[in-house]
Length: 290
Image 1 (tube, rainbow, N blue to C red):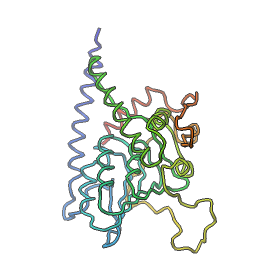
Image 2 (image 1 turned 45 degrees about the horizontal axis):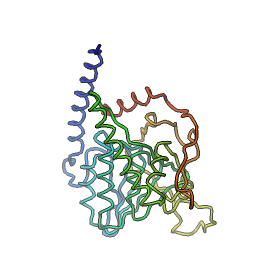
Image 3 (image 1 turned 180 degrees about the horizontal axis):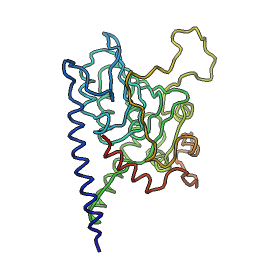
């Protein structure tokens, strides 16, 4: 017997989501009297000059945070030959993330992506779009499989499975193009939900350089890399509740590609983070977040 109460609740949630989407579209419109900014600080350009501009992504990816449309509108306004994109994001909507990745990867400027705090989920493959990819030594990067919500019969569910399978392959290809290895190996690493520190991401080939590497450096060197301060009024409520593990400290050692060992075997370690129900509720909360 169908539980009509559950169906009614699901429909109510969809109605709330549609309402929030309309509010997000209004939020991404240019602020009055400012042709280059938006009404919120989810994505901000700072120190734009003739030679270099810095863009901050310090929020979720998608209609409840950094939307692809809002990001591309600001990106297209930049004429500087060098762009640095600083990332501190738990990820979010896959298609918006792919659109942002494509916009950065095809931009004529030299794009440096810099993971300053966390680049999880969609934010991790946005980072792969950089001509140069940097990461703070003690920052975190997380890769995992795509997920989503679906309602319907077995054919509807199978369509969702097919879509998620294709998305996973496309995302694994982004990691492979940067780090090497095989798509199959990265798919297995995504299935495990792999968390990387800066040093681990460097060893895996996911980033080109990290701040404060092990080599001794001249502290007076003006080129010494520092983790920059976030933009004023940036949002910092980044939730990890939707993931299997509650951060790098709770996760097993991540996948590091090695010559002669391209296939990654997932270790038999049970997640220590939230339950499946907790993750589903967290995902729903993100969809409904204002």
